[in-house]
Length: 176
Image (tube, rainbow, N blue to C red):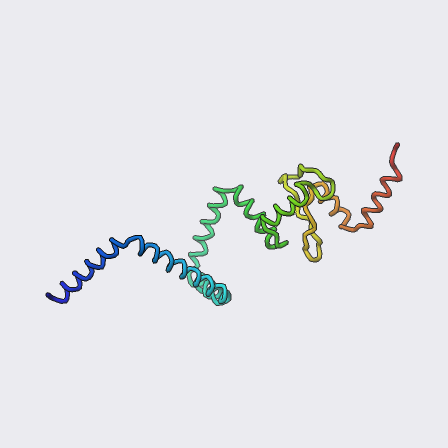
């Protein structure tokens, strides 16, 4: 038997063995794949700057990729305007206030689904959602407000003294 024949026979026996033990090998391959993915993820997180720099260099060397990616993104945005707007909103809340969808839902639940000031359960305004009220210096989230209450606080520059003065003014000019 020649070397080529021996190799062909070994390949055939290996193929038959793998076929008869297909489920074992599939499970093994999935586990190895998951381990590799987890390992890759950990390495990327540990070497984020290096990965980003390599990517920037690659994109700089292949400017057509950026254009292609941009065109693909524009197409998706045009095809999915509602999803794009929703994604943009949650990305903004996450980056500016560090609040996720789950955090927002929990905050709304703690407020019984109502505005923290007036108690309405029907947020008004263009988007018909509660606004995330925050301290303007630190961006610390205070609560969720309806459009009217959020605008009102904004006009009073979040100054309790101004709000109290406005309340005194309204009380002194009440018509009984």
